[in-house]
Length: 200
Image (cartoon, rainbow, N blue to C red; front, side):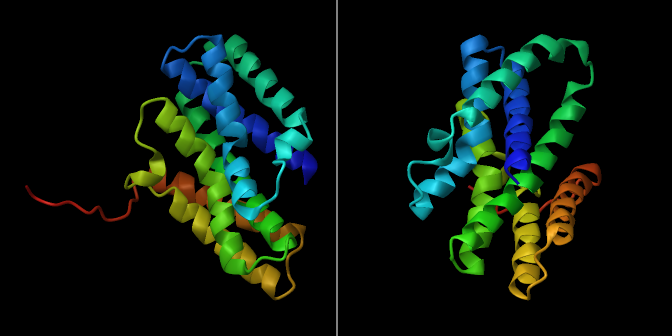
């Protein structure tokens, strides 16, 4: 799980770097956005749950990973013309991985399944939300796109199977795949939640 966590950090760092590149930020800006995207959700989760110092202060390897992959993205992203497609796929994977890991960590600390699902969603979504705010965009979870809904549904599935004692690696992977394909399917077929709109 530790190496999966590092991999998830790397994936979100890449997505943050790509968004920063679209905004034509300098190298420092790219590193900041990559780091916020990579560790933001987990940081907010740990603070809410009282797990301080937060994980990346206890283990600075997470910061080394974000900086390394931010710089690697600066170097190699220009060789990929379809970076938008990679951004969508990587973001969906990071959402799936971080959501389930957030649920798993919260359950392991003895919190209720309901709190675990919420904290999983926070872990998966809040790094990207802070990234979007810093980049001057409306966060995805505030729009009609199915993003947090995919995370919530996958978190609920994992919490349910864990509650009946089925929380092994296969169900971890199954819950992640549900979130991943739910998110991509919503993009592919333009699925969305109803919007709330008031006339002037």
